[in-house]
Length: 238
Image (cartoon, rainbow, N blue to C red; front, side, top):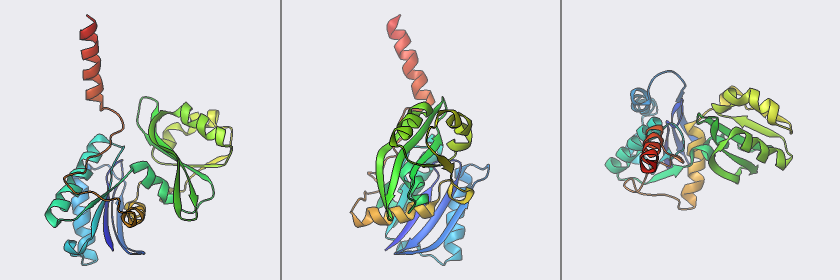
């Protein structure tokens, strides 16, 4: 089975192609360009380098959210467009699950942190049984103090990763009661390779959808939607 994976859910843009148990190629970039400028050119360059015929791809994996609203829309639109054009199914991977899968095989608790602003993170709590990802707390939008409390209650060493780590590292230093560490740089951000590997597991379980069915999971309203809801609430109280 051959899977094309796309991740533009955060600051990183990443594309990968995996065939069975072999990672054929991965192109990851963490630079200040919009994903609309990078994602398709990266895919085109990767396809040229490995002489990839997109028609030979069996499924397209995409980071399904949460994450940057703009990034998720770009990734979703790209995956849906490819799925419709190639008549291939999509495999939507929860963003935080995919991020956790970077640390596949560790014996420690894994806690990805994506900065969601307003003192919140997109996060989840995971562990591995061999190479199998176990979800202890499904991905959520949570206050940083709330997630620290949940981790302390487990009483085990934690590995943090994600763009939320540098933002909240100092705060976590005050809140954490258990031992913890940060993942190394090459494993600390979204990688389409990890997404592709997890997508292989999903595919074996039949967890696929059509391009038409796919919708990103934002987990919470956008800032514009929150502001509009607040205005409506205020108007109704007047």
